[in-house]
Amino acid sequence: MTSSAHVQRALGPSGRNMQLKGRIGFSNLPDQLVNKQVKRGFDFNILCVGETGIGKSTLMETLFKTPFDDVPVSHKQPEVSLTQHSYELHEGNVDLRLTLVSTTGFGDQICRESSHSAIVNYIEKQFELYLQEELKIKRNLVDFRDTRVHACIYFISPTGHTLKSLDLICMKELDSRVNIIPVIAKADTVSRPDLLHFKKQLMQELGSNGIKIYTFPTSEEPVGELNSKMNDLLPFGVVGSREEVISGGQRIRARQYPWGLVEVENETHCESAKLREMLIRTNMEDLREITHTVHYQMYRGNRMTGMGFTDVSADNKPVSLQETYQQKRNEHLKEMHAREEHMRAMFVQKVKEKEADLKAAEQKLIDDQDRTREQHADQKKALEKEKLNLEDEISQFNKRKAQVQAQRAQTELLANNAAITKSGHHGKK
Image 1 (cartoon, rainbow, N blue to C red):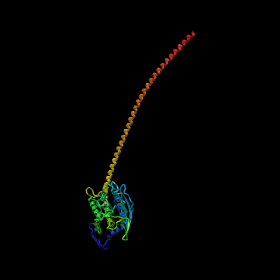
Image 2 (cartoon, helix red, strand yellow):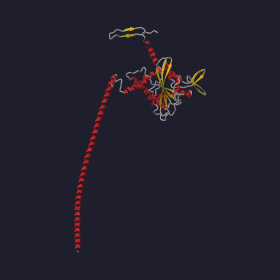
Image 3 (cartoon, rainbow, N blue to C red):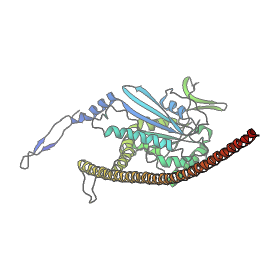
Image 4 (cartoon, helix red, strand yellow):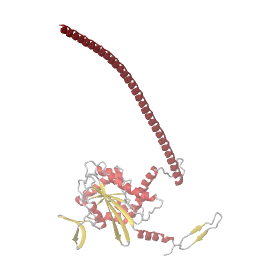
């Protein structure tokens, strides 16, 4: 392979220009990038959103031709949750770290207003994990396991009429966060004309509600023409199967019915093969790129703006990260100083309130002490008065006692004298 390159090199403001002709070698740069990336492997993460039993796990096994972990769930889940399984797939010399995330209990609740919350939270959590790694001082994005959702396969029930309100609300919440690829599940349950009419009806309804789905890029060669044709077939009518049957001497994946056989790889029976072609073989890297450059950047921009970072100042001048950091640091220090002053004022106020309470308690004790002292003085006066009264009563009692005793002694003396006189008269006789 021959190539030529024309290079102009300027040596300073007054230097001379040199033109170099011939092959330099930077045309090998794509090969170097490919070799490095092949050694590292690739991350690809798919989110399957749909009602319980609609065939999410079966379709994934059909697309990747690999049996995956699948635990059956009932329709009695109290809330929507997500299950995540990661796998290491190998094809040729390419390693693919595949993560399959599936909704559990979606559409099974009576109140479905918040059915999308768990899905949105999961998607944003993966963005946040990547952002935290990106903001580290010692970051390692090369070896970091990227768990951001690259594609959301949204399973639509084959009702043949219109989208459910649950689907409209959920897709409206997701379209700015993830690449939505709607598919009509169990497409073998409706006739071909009804399926085409249902597709048209769905696309009109999505457009009228402002829901943006992922469209395959048409500006890139050599897949632009193929992607343009595939965009006209959206949403794909898919059929999945875990069963393998013998047909025409070959073992194929199919669904066996009493009326016939539905071959999941046959493009005249369903569009599962077209979905695999667009999702994996043709546009996997575009899905990864759109996730990083559009959805993640939108989340990152909102988070950085929320933290106070900006690219331009109020007068539309560029702002460096250092200036923003210094500004946020000053704002933080100012806020901390204000909080410190507020805490100091609150502390002083609390101390004053406590001092006032203590003074009030002290004054109450003093008043109680004075009141008790007065009560004691009054009681003492009353007791002294009562004592004087008792002493007077004792003195009067003693006087009366002395009088009585004196009268008794006198009476006894008179009686004795009378007895003596009487006894004298009897002796003379």
